[in-house]
Image (tube, rainbow, N blue to C red; front, side, top):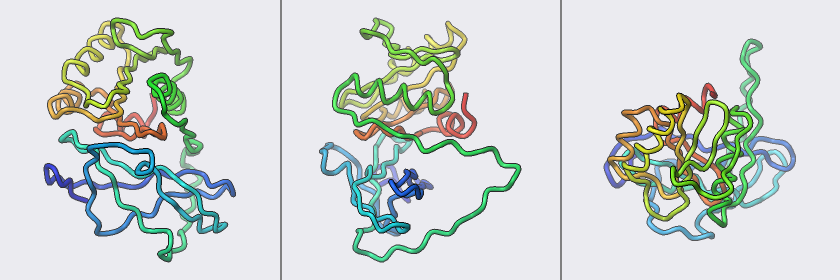
Length: 226
């Protein structure tokens, strides 16, 4: 799909969640529909109705989103639930493949503290251990710490700045640990570029508490863990 802001091409696959019946479920993307930049968030727009092909249950699921390298956060159109959905094809996992992670279970973000909690849960899901939250946000801006890890969470409605990404990198460098950044509103163009240069994993979170990687360093962290 193509970003309508900068015209860059992206490949995207929707996040899979577990249906209450146990079947994996991902919102069916509407093929050929153009993504839309998110300029204002509302609770209604952050959810879509999806039907499980295994049990027929209809529930609200997080609206798929994608963070573009230009800093825009894009809403990915989903096929209406009334449209017929193709049956999923089961592809067996090779015997030598590593066991997949269980599905990530997000927490809804209503406050800044919820955003920090959601990021902490996600880091634990990735494989970081003993992730601790600060009681009050320190001057360094580091919200989460753990063995081999510092992380910053920006719950504001403004894209994360170049300075913020560089400050996280300096904190991580001084402690010889991995630095990870989470933002609710994406990143400015120069912040995104600097994150790439410094190999800082950058994630965008939606109000459901589900982080999405927006650069190669974040993709690698999701794929391999810490």
